Image (cartoon, rainbow, N blue to C red; front, top):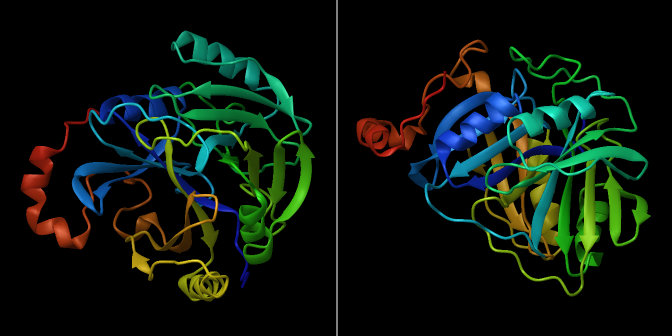
Length: 313
């Protein structure tokens, strides 16, 4: 049993409109909605999970679509960019697809010897498609017009923007087992050897950067992966012993969670592989129906009435 941090588990962001978010991530980007539920703390808001066929950890991007919350602003103390692996020679096709759908897309560029294509979602969330320098054998979710030679394969990396990186870097290296891989200017790349993919965290140091505002188009938190909740609790002790505060274990139905704010201000989560998304739906049915935490099931009718209607065809 691997008792390490196994790279990224999921990343959670904020959207302004549920339908627009669903349309972009399932139709334009071609991800599978693997779970449609609600925010545990605000059941009048959806919680969408997008990923590959099974919702494998390391592929899962989730959203709180708070209707009408308004735009946020990237800044220091936040996760500011999400990177996805894509197959070799697919970036030109992606650039053309984005232009076809009116997506704000930048020019292809190179970072740490890898070619990437930056773009933003309808709320301005910053993402990149990256042709990774190391092989990625993960299978993407296929749609009618996005096949394996183009489909996203899961996370490549996440970027954190910080005024100072030292204390955050210490969390990554001393607690999580990452190592400093390379530096380009004010960007420092950390990687874990515990997994082959979804293994990179970039720290971008901006001493004079402005604080961000957490609303639509920004990331809410970054979740790191462990195999099970026994290993998770070992990491809880390590984090407490480092002098940081961390929550008790919380049951999120599809995984168990711990939350803490790292020294640079980014909200981190440690999430387990178990029990997974097929605990309440079959693999074929994932994402088809609204799943509620047990404490809200008695209020299903009222919750369904308050949630925005979602067209999923």
